[in-house]
Length: 207
Image (cartoon, one colour):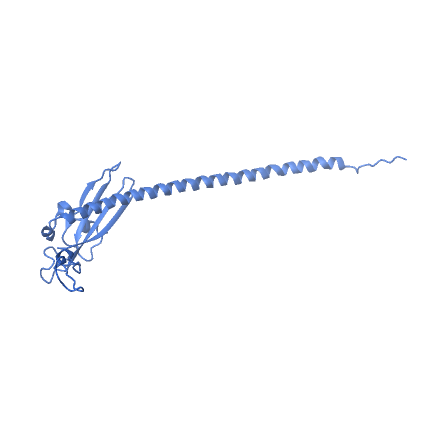
């Protein structure tokens, strides 16, 4: 006797319906994957752009800092070779001010930068560099003039040249007769893209 297996009614029709349901799920899944990939691409693009901008800004700040250092260097060159007898008075042409009030700040635009000088460097485009040298004394004139004068001073340095060839005790210290006065050099620069840098240095020089 030969038997035949008969599928339940409606079974053949059920398979195409399940396949249709699976095919319908694939579309939302693909759309979600595409959205994730799009968001990831945008994030990577923004990240690389931010890194490029940060690197560019750091290089720009470094260039401005070097230009401001040039102002400090030029000011130091001038004061280190200037006739010390002339430093008791202001020399506006060289950006030198022979006094500075203790409460004066770089934020006091008019008062602090009065007497400064400006020059242009060789950069492309060129930078305008401004510097001012302040002698850290309350007033103009000699540092050891009347009691009203007050200057920031350091102990005299050892006078090595005068001790050569002299006979003295090993623990004897030969000092210069004058103390060292403090001079504050301040230089600043305004870059072509709006950035600005300010550098300062303190120089100790015998009067």
